[in-house]
Structures are given as C-alpha cells and as structure tokens.
Image 1 (cartoon, rainbow, N blue to C red):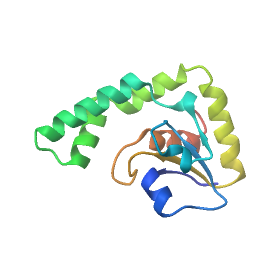
Image 2: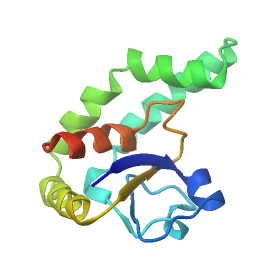
Image 3: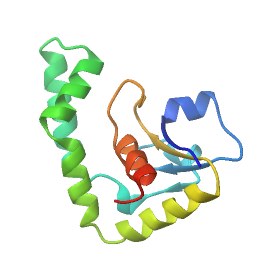
Length: 135
C-alpha cells in the first residue's frame, strides 16, 4: 500500500480517515495529527540543531526559505547522516518493522514539519526506505 510523507499543516487542514499516521519527530502539535510518534526513528537532536543553524544562517545571507532548507540539507549530507544514526539507534529496527507491517495493511502517512513536495524531510527519507523495504 502507499507510504507517503506529509506535513503537519497538511494534516491539520486536510485530515484523512482510514489512514495510519506516524510522526518522525516530536515537535509541538504532532500529537494532535499522528496516531503514534516513532521516537526510535526520529533524527538525533544534534543533527536537527546543526540543520536548523545552517538553514538560519543561509536565510540571513539572503536565501529563500526553500533554497536555504534544501541546500543546507544537501551540504550537511542529512539523508546519509540520518540513516546512519537511526540504523544504530536502540529500537529503530523494531519500529521500522512495525511501520513495514502497517504499510502492508493500508495507507500510511509519515508526518513532518515541512512540506515534503518542496523540502527534503526525514519523513521523506523514511518513506523511501519503507517503500524499498529496508532501513
């Protein structure tokens, strides 16, 4: 079944029924739109902090929000660093297996702070891994 990333804003404005939703991190507001938070699959705070700092610095130098976000993501190699971190995380493989099982039973959305159609997200990386069948 489909596994797609989505944003908190999208879930708040267009709630879905008969779809399991998981959060990939724990920002405020997630609890109202997700069925469960995947804490073992959440990015480490130091990775998020480095990303937010770099993105903010780029915006202060005049980059647009989307450009600052995506260029910081690429330059910090967040996709690989995130996967390395969660692969070594306690409980990550168990949570990933649970997500795989849920995805075989119906539609699944992985929720993040950002619009995954415009910005790279940890939920997007995780969605890709679920579709491919391995962490």
